[in-house]
Image (cartoon, rainbow, N blue to C red; front, side, top):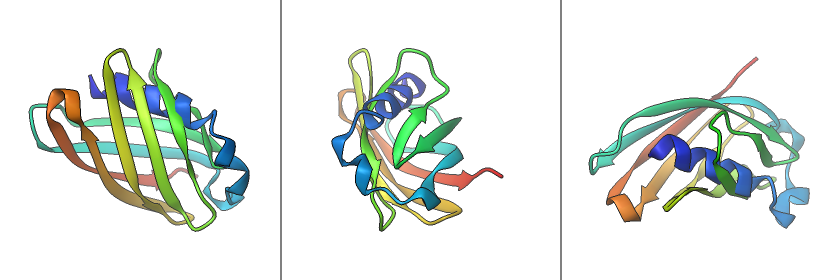
Length: 118
């Protein structure tokens, strides 16, 4: 499922060597919504934590993330859980973000949006 995939992506994201390039303004708790525009995947919302540009908490057990938010706010992350691997790209500002995602093995794709929580 996508929730599992998203959690997986966040864990891989936390291990990225590129995280040192991150800007602390992107750090904190984020509420992320995944919207499916192609395929039969569901809509999901979960809270994630970002530290030094890396996802440190996904809110979905068993998920692994790999990727980063660079100093310009560009998001490049892949989430994995089991055989599901979601590719996520987009951008964030200090308070919000948006982009696209694909989950090829389930023939799903769509968009995501995020809000930084206070």
